[in-house]
Image 1 (cartoon, rainbow, N blue to C red):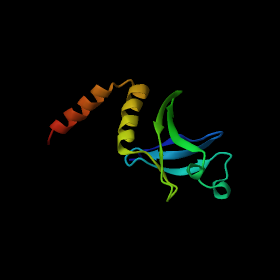
Image 2 (image 1 turned 45 degrees about the vertical axis):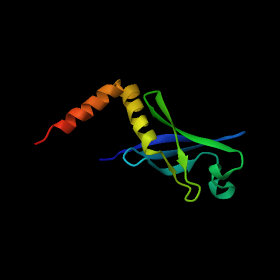
Image 3 (image 1 turned 60 degrees about the horizontal axis):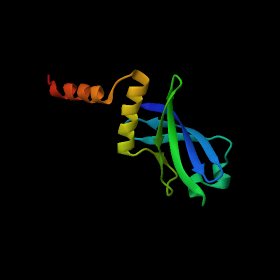
Image 4 (image 1 turned 135 degrees about the vertical axis):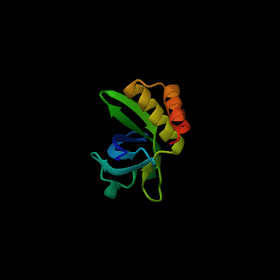
Length: 118
């Protein structure tokens, strides 16, 4: 089962926003295949390494609806990811926004599934 969804990533600097795209793995929170738009990462370095770097966020979109979330950047490896807590929040908010499923209903459905044994 493919649990990767396309996301937009925004590295916010003091006077510039650097946009990129990637794939968010909904199982692990890893963001792979990051491609910068109009930014030379090899020549200019990782945006998060800049002195005026502020934060990084991501957007998951579906049918004109968006879920915005915080993205972590590992300065040592240059990899982007989402924390476990943030990933859970993304899933709940996306279910509510995209499918009209309430967080309580989502949790209750998961609880019901755990109670069954075959």
